[in-house]
Image (cartoon, rainbow, N blue to C red; front, side, top):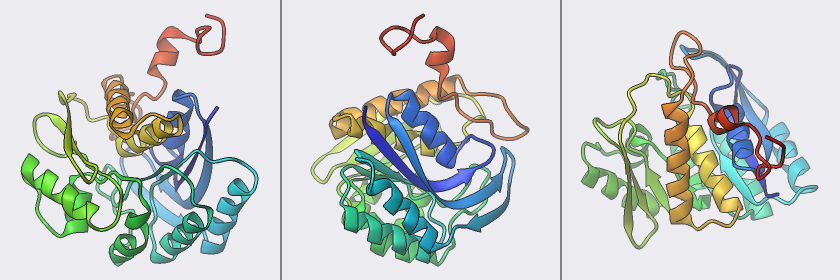
Length: 272
């Protein structure tokens, strides 16, 4: 079994953040581990409060994992402050893990900010260059590049501009655009498009966390980048299609739909 580490914030409502990451890792047959950088009091409707973990404790959590367990991939999510970013960057440089997938989380699904505005420059300088894959959505890509994205061509240009900041590949997610859900991948050589029909539901809490964690899981298992993104796209689309109408706002995706529907088969390690 491959081991995947999430470095992110905690969502007490269970739909996003560390909780979504661990569910996604498990759904992909990998062993999930976590480093919590912020405790977020949130639900499907709003973010009530954020309490950041001290940089020292963040660093010690990362040390505790890496000194004991082989890490086959790392997913990095919410990093709200420059100090948090700096300690995470220092530790990743120290341990040199393979397959670093970074989701530059800036806002909750309801629009509440999860990153300090002054932290964006620190992210560009210290975090983005560490990414094997960076997965911004359109609003995040606009913040990073300082440009406006209104078309697929704009998405492609933004991906190329972000790639020039030092990461190895960029996926600009089109979930915030109208009509179809089209994502653009640039690996430094070629543009790829991943296109699916848009699912008519408000229950999309945690989709970005889930998508990036699915990519990390696939890369940990040795799947190449293009196929990892393709399979992650298929997984998150399934999870959205069967999303859960939990809470009063944007409900979560269904990370374990296949398991709940079909049960544990022998192939999955149990009896039907």
